[in-house]
Structures are given as structure tokens and as C-alpha cells.
Length: 136
Image 1: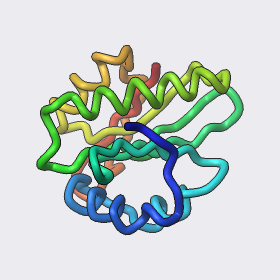
Image 2: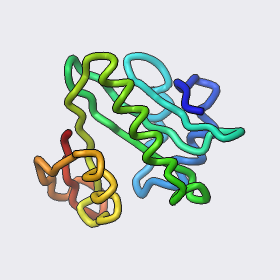
Image 3: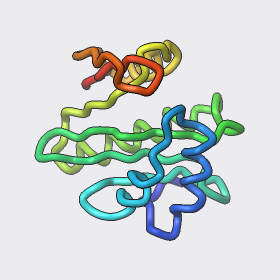
């Protein structure tokens, strides 16, 4: 099931964030569990992943998409990304951007599978890596 996140989800989502993302930002996740951000949660008995997007007029920025490590490789990330893109389109947002580590080839392939292309390179975006901005 995919549903919108609520403030009470923060502890579970924080665990997923810490286990999955190379540069977790707990404050962003906590602040995002409210408007104007959109947080979608994928649950199978309990939350196993989430997507956090920040809409701005006709463009949305996907700040985080994370699936619990033990639930990766099952198509959960694809289910969540499809739901997020559909939800944003329902709100009239067709342009979606996100940033990924330049050294994360598997992640790049995932985003390209949804029609994202690289539109910008950001040197030293992460503590230990450059970043790539993708857009769809």
C-alpha cells in the first residue's frame, strides 16, 4: 500500500533513511512530513520505503527516495517512483528533478528507466562525491 506520510511515521522513516542513504539529512525528513512537501510511504505491514518531493509551481524536486535495504531488488522502488510521478502529475506537475551521486551507476539506470536525463553536473555536491541533476 502507498499512502501519504504523517508526522508519526518519522521514527520508522528515519531508520530507513539512516540505513539507505549515503548522506542522510534527518531534519529534512522531519520537516517534510507536512505541507508543502509530499511524502509517500510504501508499506507492507510497516513502512519499507518512502519518497519525499517538494513541489514548486509546475516543477517538483525529489529530495529523497529510499527503500529499506532488506526490501531492495523486489520492485518496491519502482512502485514508489511510479506512484510519486502519478501523484505529481495529478497536481499538474510534469517536470520532476532530482540529484544523485555521480558515482552511483545503478541509481542512474533506475532513474533513466523512468525517463530522467542528466541536465547538470554539480562538483563536490556530496561530502565525498560530485552530483548529477536529473530531470524528467
